[in-house]
Amino acid sequence: MELLEELEIAPCNSSQYLRPFRLHYRQNGTKKFWDFMRTHDSVSILIFNITRQCFVLVKQFRPAVYMCELERHNPEVFQVKDMNDCCYPRDLLPASVGVTYELCAGIVDNPELSLAETACKEILEECGYNVPVANLRKISSYRSGVGVTGSKQTLFYAEVKDSMKTDIGGGKAEEGELIEVVEIPLEDAFNFSFDENLPKTMGVMFGFMWFQNNVAPLLPQKIKTNKITPIP
Ligand SMILES: O=c1ccn([C@@H]2O[C@H](COP(=O)(O)OP(=O)(O)O[C@H]3O[C@H](CO)[C@@H](O)[C@H](O)[C@H]3O)[C@@H](O)[C@H]2O)c(=O)[nH]1
Ligand SMILES: [Mg+2]
Image (cartoon, rainbow, N blue to C red; front, side, top):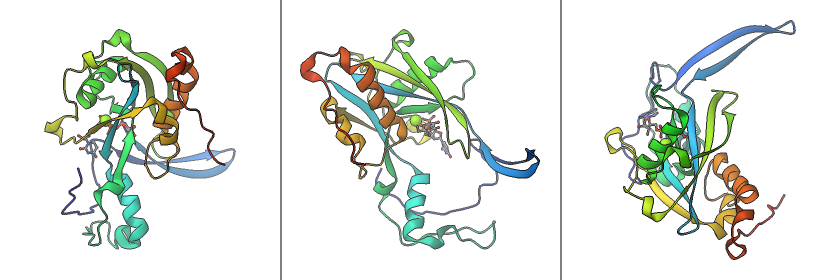
């Protein structure tokens, strides 16, 4: 995951994942426009391993995160004069600056599967646990990237046991997915959440908070999470 070479930044003129549009409109008499992208909806799953009392997260290289960091150190990377130009950044940063901790998640791109079935498929592909659909609990759904995509993400909760682990996970190798499965012990979860040196998604932070409010109170006292209050 850490070896990053041959970077080329090129314009994205067509994509199976993103379609940019501009909506022109008049709102309360004021003429406006807004640029946005159509993308797939998605599912994400907060996974808790009850055998070892830990959360199961995934870690992966995210090009968008990496490029934000690269631009901060190297402002010219996106300053191409012609939209057909390519840029070959030289002063690279380690790949690790673009690696984030996330909930297991996937895009909803198979209309034949329900959201819960899609979630179970992602759990198996990314984390290696074979979870029956009936074991999933829907937490809620929400809008992500409201300024840019506004797509809907549905969040599930899944409790797993070591005995349900039938595969190593890691994502679909044939699609080039390179995913590391990581376990966060329950007692470390809240310190992990607020450690800004460990880049993570809001889904992870929300998921841990939800667990604290909805599942932790039902656990035996000795394994409850350490609740910490973030410093303002
Ligand atoms: O530009 C792209 C985009 C996607 N892929 C492929 O498509 C797969 C998508 O993986 P999947 O696990 O289905 O989706 P995620 O990348 O995990 O994205 C989900 O998880 C993210 C983190 O929660 C959310 O931001 C997204 O909305 C949500 O779809 C990738 O692994 C690649 O194989 C590419 O090759 N190129
Ligand atoms: Mg994924």
